[in-house]
Every structure is written in structure tokens, then in C-alpha cells.
Length: 65
Image (tube, rainbow, N blue to C red; front, top):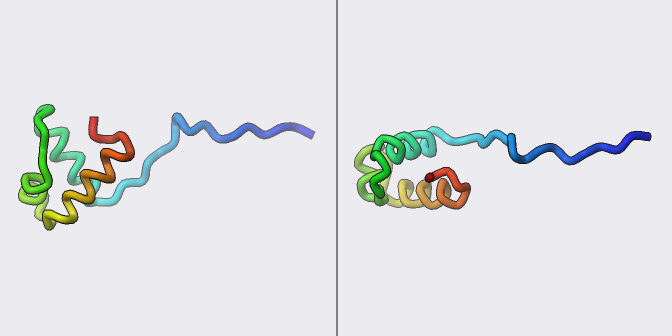
């Protein structure tokens, strides 16, 4: 009987929604400048609430930089 190791989480792929991808694009195109939910909403066409939630989610996943 062999032993099985846990899958490597370092190479885990994140599945992102279209909204998250749009927010990441806005963040990365800002040149390191902080982006708030209002500006993110204007630049993506999302509601301010959705943009705020998306930015918070990306930050919690460690994807904001």
C-alpha cells in the first residue's frame, strides 16, 4: 500500500469570474495607484456595491498585489 500526499496548493489555479478579471485589469492598469470602489465601478461598468465586493474578495484572496 502506498501513501498519497495532499495536492500541492502552491500551484492551485484560481477560477475567477468575468467581474473579477475586469477588476484585476483595472487594478493592474492603474500603475500601482490605489483604486476605490467608485473608480472601479466607473471603469468596469459595474455597480459601486459589486465593485466594492469584488475588490474585497480579490484582496482576501491575495490577488491585489
